Image 1 (cartoon, rainbow over the protein chains, first blue to last red):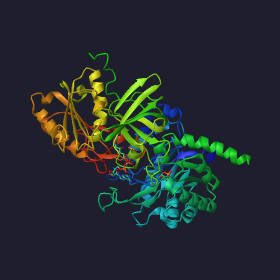
Image 2 (image 1 turned 135 degrees about the horizontal axis):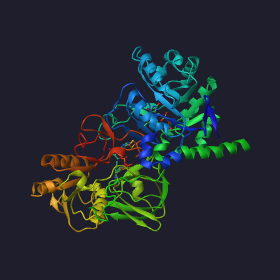
Image 3 (image 1 turned 45 degrees about the horizontal axis):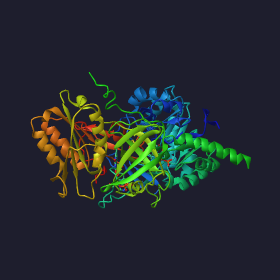
Image 4 (image 1 turned 90 degrees about the vertical axis):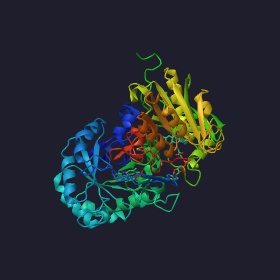
Length: 291
Length: 291
Ligand SMILES: Cc1cc2nc3c(=O)[nH]c(=O)nc-3n(C[C@H](O)[C@H](O)[C@H](O)COP(=O)(O)OP(=O)(O)OC[C@H]3O[C@@H](n4cnc5c(N)ncnc54)[C@H](O)[C@@H]3O)c2cc1C
Ligand SMILES: Cc1cc2nc3c(=O)[nH]c(=O)nc-3n(C[C@H](O)[C@H](O)[C@H](O)COP(=O)(O)O)c2cc1C
Ligand code: FES
């Protein structure tokens, strides 16, 4: 069931969604057995920013019918500390590493891409563009023009594959086309849908960050449609995600045009979901090819 | 020299990899709470203070799509046997997940992953001269203290137990302590001291031997904050078992943030749920439950 994604050989098509699996913390909780049975065929890091971030004040989670709103706020140790202490530990996982990065200007993105791509442990980079560009005030991933110009700025900095993570909060196909025109090697979608929740004890917002992003089973139908639309619009590979919890869901995304799929929220419920989805998918694909 | 019973007392136990389906062997009323047991055939014996993420195999997501995510529960008691480890949980029905768990039938199966998190540390690790332990529990928060009392007793370390309940509806589980010397308080005066359990602690800390005990507490946030401040005032070391909303329990989601004394946040599922009183800014964790 191996697949090639931007020239990277993957043992199976199931990755993790950025920010939904901390392999270092998981190894601490479950021990080295995790490495022997690592659930994903490549590991996507949590989004790294140039400087350390503490993240949003709690509460950060709200459960919805079959879904989860998170307002985590990208806590991370910052680029330097990630490269120095996290990356060597992630290299021990024994699967290709994809590092997710987010900046608020071309200069910040350039610093991240240069610093991360220089490391031989890293196979590819994912650009998280769900943030405003401080220079234009526009959310990069919501604007085809901003996305194309960001890619043009960072594309020359590395030959390593660049994946653009698309937001479902605007129609993603035009942004995907712009990313590919700017030189992206692949696109991934969907990121979370903007959402909020009210404190049951009063009319105030529940989340410390005011609002957050919806993920999980509840977003699956939206992900399926958007993956189909994007896959029809671009020739670069598509990594599909959003509410995948079984091999059948993964199979639907692949049928819609995805080359690989990612599991996010389901890993919270089942830490080995990636492995389970991969084996269910294998059966699913065998069944499809035999009919 | 450590006695034969002490090796490993307070040592963090690593979880078996992934979630497993465990059979429910018992579910009984305990005052206003329920105690149910599950047979964990493939897991280790947990340390006191550690927790499991639980979900029922059938009928999770039954009430209008919630509960969707697994929920955290402290292990209240456990017993290794020929077929596996029997895990006992004390549960208070406060919402869809806890209502579903309270209705578990014998022979039903439960998904669980764990044991997770940082357990209670022995008194000698908290303060060099401690002679014994004072256990302070409030409401459903008595659960992890029951196992801790048994483990301390097994290691020959004396402990005094102070438990408080709001009213007779919100009380139960005393039998889990398997000891007779428990000082009780209730806010409605239905049993024991009429008032807060922290009144009992205050009296105890004002006694001669105040400095020679380590305090362990679990309960509603307001109680924990009062314990923390009392211990600080009396120069007594304390550990608190906190709650925060948790989606994964193993460090994957960054949802369980608790403010640290020095600024920034910890992930309660991996750096807690047991924390030193001096490590945190406050025990009044936003969104951290308390019932
Ligand atoms: C480490 C740890 C150990 C624990 N041990 C025990 C134990 O031994 N026994 C026990 O009974 N409980 C224990 N708890 C608490 C238990 O996990 C919660 O009571 C449980 O998650 C509640 O789920 P629910 O669906 O029944 O209630 P919910 O509906 O989730 O409500 C619980 C609280 O969460 C908030 N809330 C309400 N709706 C939502 C929503 N949609 N999304 C997010 N938050 C919401 C509110 O503050 C509410 O009071 C523990 C918690 C932790 C973190
Ligand atoms: C708690 C949480 C944290 C996330 N953090 C990130 C992140 O740091 N960077 C990113 O690109 N996406 C992040 N995501 C989005 C996921 O990678 C994924 O796109 C989304 O959750 C949809 O997939 P799912 O429904 O399978 O979870 C996060 C999602 C969740 C639930
Ligand atoms: S509960 Fe997910 S990181 Fe702590």
